[in-house]
Image (tube, rainbow, N blue to C red; front, side):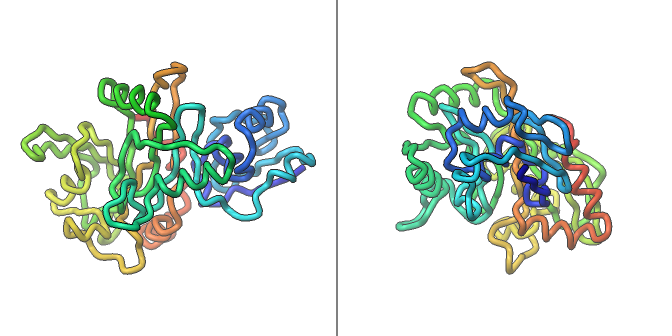
Length: 296
């Protein structure tokens, strides 16, 4: 058996995503076979593709020549959270733009298309949801114009369930709803304080509407900007590649299969480090609590 101890970098990652990163060149059918055949367990119990991994878990996988042949020798360049024939959901790192904003600038779409081509499954990708350059987390990319149209209409008509994690400057109430129009349009953002530190707080944020920079603008308007968000007067972080805002969860009923899909995006190391500094001795129990947050 091959045995893996789940690290903090994989906390709240689905088993399906862990296998995809472990075996990046494996066909989707082969990954499904590993879970259906009972060749994979978590803490000694059979796992399903959507089993959520927690830091400290033990994942065991039956060793075979095929598995050893497909196993990566280094982490893949693209962190895939979910994939099917129509979309791929990736964990965008902070500081990487989804779209090109300057000449010769590398984008998330570039990285993803290069990875898929090198894997032998080339395709032109189209973003379904867009994150700001400095924001990390779950980003949906459609694999064709048809899929982009289907998912684009779905998002416009039904919307996505979304949960963000943010570190905001200052001391905030236990929860609140920011109801301030942006660009002349109704805009609402709900937040709950998960941890209050001396000079900052970890927030669970649910955007009720979807305006540009909505979370960042709304928190800044309350006097509690996202840490590292220089555009909206957040406390600067010299070593952070973006700002402390992470698209932690996205949920939707798949418009083609009809299946309820819930995807978590593990936090980037830079954000984990900021949480360690914010929470001190309470860091570990706080991190553990993220695996049981309510669905949006």
